[in-house]
Image 1 (cartoon, rainbow, N blue to C red):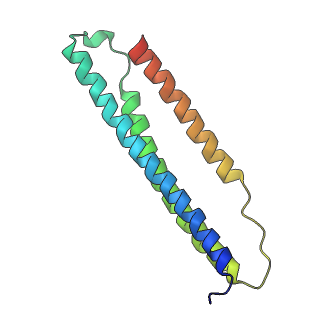
Image 2 (spheres, rainbow, N blue to C red):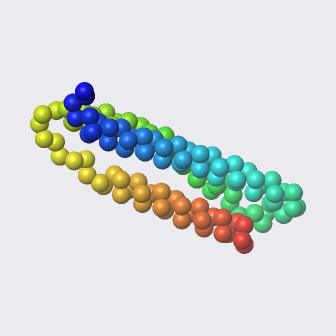
Image 3 (spheres, rainbow, N blue to C red):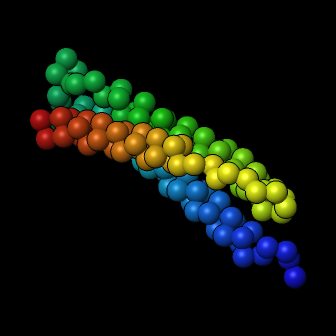
Length: 126
């Protein structure tokens, strides 16, 4: 039997949840970047003059930003997984990692989502 098995299993589940979230962000970033390409193609097919197009570069940058954010989350999740696994087997008590990083990450994703929503409203609806 593995010592502290339930703690190690919980650590692994948490790690896999972070990886799953990162994969979703990477996929969403890819979709956002490709959707921006679709907007460009549909606007040119409808013969909208280029001078009337708002800045479509934001969609590309946001998509790439989401992909980079997803890759960063995988790196941080791996670092935290290994550190927690080491701390579980250590007989000394260790303070928890805190939640500042998690809250900052959630806020960053929320703000990026708001910016993407505004971008879509002004590019498709307007």
